[in-house]
Image (tube, rainbow, N blue to C red; front, side, top):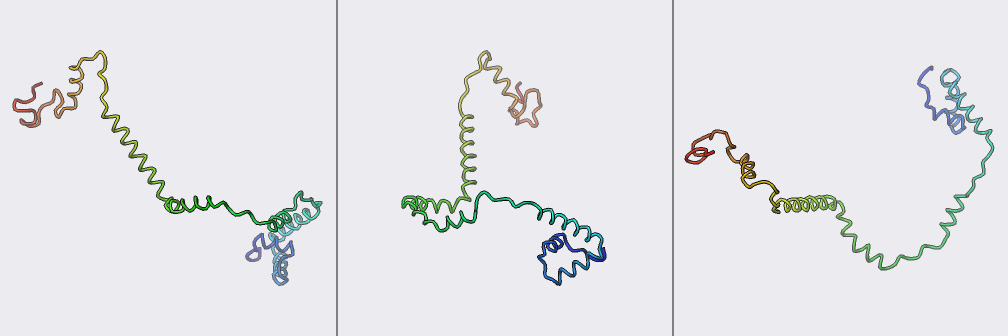
Length: 164
């Protein structure tokens, strides 16, 4: 490399003969002095020659003719009037579509909260085989002063202290 080498797409344009004469001459002079660019240019020329040797492949459909035929075809029939009215009704709603996601999420969270809260308010039937005293003893763990603990001050457990 004698100086900064040109990019590969510039060498490819040289092989395709798509460069102006002054740029082409400068690239040929550089590739004659730079072995790296000369090797890359030789590879690109070999690839170009290999593609030129391929037989032409017929295309099954003429896309250009189909596009031009559709452009010259009759215009589409006008839309139904009821569809325009329906679209006109939903335009104000569609303008606020960015608010639908938070609105749906909030509604779902509130609905779920009301449902679960309502489930807490229902009275469950007593469990069979347990006496009420066992349930009360189990619930005494949630008292301000659990059983077996000392009262932090005299008036916290009543006037006579913890009666348990």
